[in-house]
Length: 390
Image 1: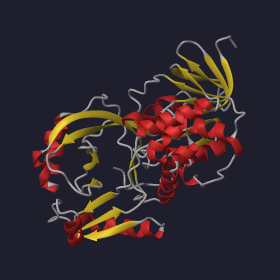
Image 2 (image 1 turned 120 degrees about the horizontal axis):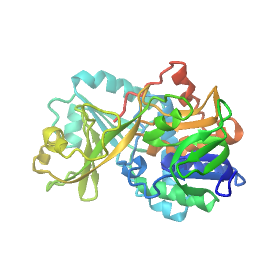
Image 3 (image 1 turned 30 degrees about the vertical axis):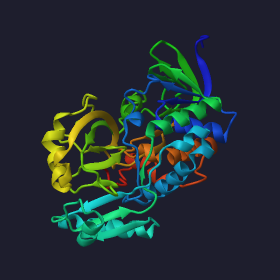
Image 4 (image 1 turned 180 degrees about the horizontal axis):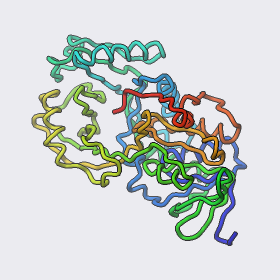
């Protein structure tokens, strides 16, 4: 091993929200652990964590996602206790998510509401008259039902959370190494390090794939075709002269979403086609061709809306079942996965990373059982489908 090489207990490929939260939790639970995070771009210019709209919700269709969000909101409410004091101002706004359904989707939305209520989610069921009374700016003629999160849902400062995790991880002794990982060392089940483009090797007993949208490329170094794709999403910054009262994060039956951001609004929609690895440039044309007509139909005040900016980020989409992939595979016990969270990774990172840290250090989940997300379900063809993917 050359002088430039390192030997550590854990090497994490990727310093975004999952990698940094995991580094934080491992060294919080075991301060003696020698850990390095390999990140090719410390500016996070193209990192999904920095480009997310940073929402958090409990209106999911799978129990494990509800449980994770219930724990995550508690973490965010008390972030200053877990992280440095600056994390106390993550700008958490619990203004709720409002799901809307036409007659065609009402039965499904009602079933989701019943399931969520049974799991302790504070969510209201609103019929058309309720929607019209509570949100007078909303066009309701074609709506049959809505569900509104009353507590534990909203949005926060996503880049701030990433910065806080990374800062605290460094304070706990984690080394962030700027470099591009290009492969593993070792063979078969005996992977023992990460090779960098400049020739350095990071020797490690445990290696974590936390590469976000690029997780499939990292998995291929071990001969694994992980079902994770990079799906571009454009976030539009909109200005509207009309001021709407009590606007939560709204999800329309047509697929678009919108929420307040200061004096402006953020909005987006799932593109068609939804190609893997589309260039990370915002689709400006989509505002006038898709988003604006749908938005003005649902909220007539937005007929006077104007586009003031846009950016694009990637979802690390798990094409198998749209839920996170955690743990190791039988023939690669030294390679850990924390991938494929399909657009809800930022909100789940505080709890998912804690759970994987427990698995790596202690061999089991201690706080919240996350075994439903085990990566082996993909090999066994046991999908755990999340239907509420925005």
